[in-house]
Image (cartoon, rainbow, N blue to C red; front, side, top):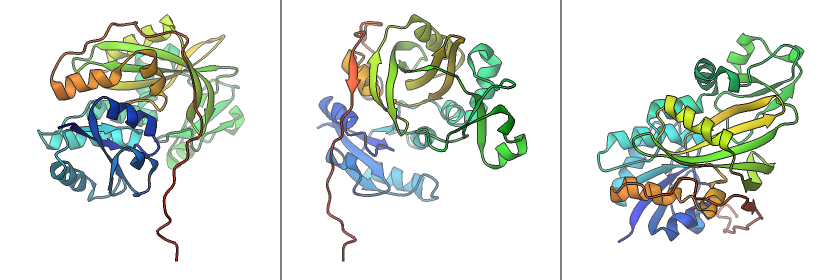
Length: 308
């Protein structure tokens, strides 16, 4: 019988779910609507919003009902949720970072304070007379982001009131994502940098793996100061003035399918540690440089139940 996994916040991550299925897992996905595209691969459990009071009990009940063993968050909001749920039931496990780390990554204001204290040179703090990017403190997917002149930065009270943070806008920068996996002991198993060649609605569309030693070393240093575990996705930007970290996501990145294709089997690492109870088996740096991913549209159809 296949081991069962519950995805949180999967939505449109169909290709990734297919990789999980290929690895021998039976997939369930907790969704707010029954017609989410992930239903092409997973059995959908229709549930509550992440803020609902009934959420924890409902997820735990369904995990027990379907004999689900592993919970995997796939968006920022659900990363802290997965850690909390798994801590309530000894029969459940999750590769998500501990709750304090997941919360730190989700809260961009707390993240800026932590990075500024440990790695002040790589966080893009606001500088006088330089343009600024405003983003939601708890946002994701590039939603609600705007770029303003230095003179138009809201005051601290206004930023707090609207739950916004301000970062220095990095002119002419090249964006990178680094897909990584940390063992249960907090050791970096491997890291795959990839250039974000084209992005739409916050999701990478075209991307290419690159053996960038600086980025890999930065991820390793960050991991020595923050107790990561499981899949972690780092977002960097680089221009002639330096390399800067924009944020960290305590989950599989939206484009991690490229790193999997390049030879870093993070899914196997997860299954070994959290289902089989075996050590990770992976050759560090053995993935392929220069693999390019180009995404295309994939249609999903369902019958409109609201039709009269």
